[in-house]
Amino acid sequence: MEFKHKPVMLQECIEGLRINEDGIYVDGTLGGAGHSKEIIKRLSKEGQLIGIDRDEEALQAAKENLKEYSNVRYIHGNHDNIKEILNDIGIEKVDGILMDLGVSSYQLDERNRGFSYLEDNILDMRMDKSQDLTAKKVVNEYAEERLADIIYEYGEEKFSRRIAKNICEYRKKEKIETTKQLVDIIEKSVPRNNKSGHPAKRTFQAIRIEVNNEIEPLYETVRKCIECLKSKGRLCIITFHSLEDRAVKKAYVEAKGKCTCPPDLPYCICGFKSEGKIITRKPILPTKEEQKENSRSKSAKLRIFEKV
Image (cartoon, rainbow, N blue to C red; front, side, top):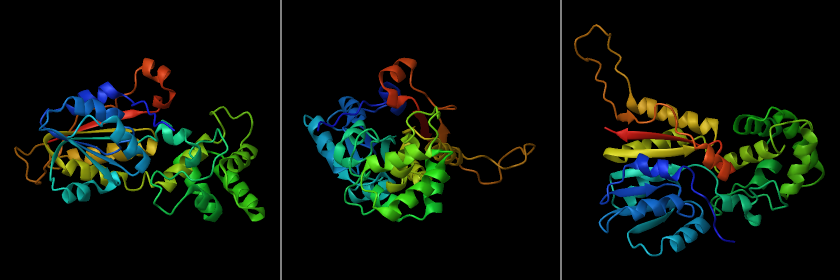
């Protein structure tokens, strides 16, 4: 299956990065290289692009998409380990970092990945196929209370308790192996007059986030990214979930810092040192045109930070 993923807020990201043609840039969520292709087009031969992705199929697709460029390094890894990855390849600081935290269209549509609730697929949802935890393990092995908490917190699903209870009742009789089995359980758990889209949407999102540990390390990842930037380097992050956006916003605010001295003091004595400034006071949102053309962009938010 062809790796398709329409990059969200492409022009806004490119403008936000303020690309230096001889600089070093990291795409921490390389995917099919939609964003990266626009970055590398703006680099000279002295510039360098480092593409990181935990999905090996994404890396292969990116290599094909960027095959005309020689100044690209492809890393099979997790952006949560960005400092270690850069250290391993002998790079201390970079000019810009981009992270698009959304799941790709390819991953949603590929049958064997089990991300989508619209077809009957194997329950998997792993971005990195080498990891042990799968959606099948989550729904068949997690305790009812833990399942309910995950569905409520990561999916913002108000019927989480009922869904978790029905999952646990079902698996007493047989193992939940496919997306269709899970969708059927969810549909029987959610009232039919529910107007928040497909009844399985929120639960599938929650399980995907749990399988790929998308939220818990994010705050620390953002702080690490800021540490890896050169002076005037920029970090652009696109989020699709309120918890993601909250973690990014918190990391930016704390990296910016705040002087704690009394306002009447003529100079600072608290030792406050800012790591940089927040470029986007409010997040940048997709245009109405983009939202119409690409429905998966509707919940996207872009926040930009610049290193001091």
